[in-house]
Image (cartoon, rainbow, N blue to C red):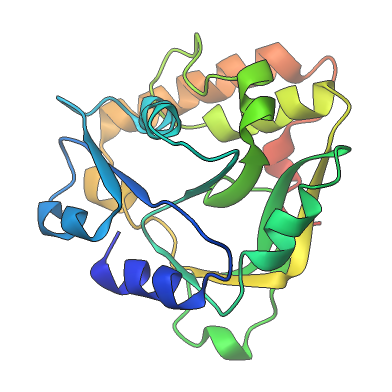
Length: 209
C-alpha cells in the first residue's frame, strides 16, 4: 500500500479507526509502515490468508475492514459499509468500485462481492474463520470461502452504493506471479469448487450484483 493510499484513508474515513499493516517477504515498501497505527512483521511470505488472520489477531476493534494495497478511497467511503453492519442479518459489506482505469470518475461504479475491500464484525470472523484453513495454497479463494461460510450462517452479503473506492487491480500479484503461483491458484480453485459446488454456485462468477 502506498503512502498516497494511506493518506486518502486518513482524509476520507468518517469513522474512528485503527490501521494495521502486515509486512511480508515480497513487500518492498517497508518505509511506509510508520504510517500505520500498528504494523506486524511476518518472517516470510506467509500468504494473503495468513496475513489477514495475523492483522485481525492484532486488532482491538469490533468491526474489521480488510483492504488490498491498491485501493484508493473516496470521501466517507466507510460510512454505509459500517452502518449496515449494525443490522445483525448482514454479515459482510462491500463498497461500490471501479477497477483498473485511471479515468475512474467517468466510469460506472459496480457493487462487487470481492476480497479487495470488505467489512465484517469480528464476532462473525470468530464463527467462520480463520481465512487460512486447509486450502492447498496460501493465497486465493480465501475470501470467496469466507463469504460462503458467512452465507451458510444465514447472513447476507451487501454492496453499499454510497461507499465508493477505486481499485487499481493486481497491485501486488503482478509483481510476484509465476508458474508455481499460477499452479497454486488452480489448486485452490479446485479445493473451493469441490467444497462448495453442491451447496452454492461458485461465488467468483457472481462478482457483479
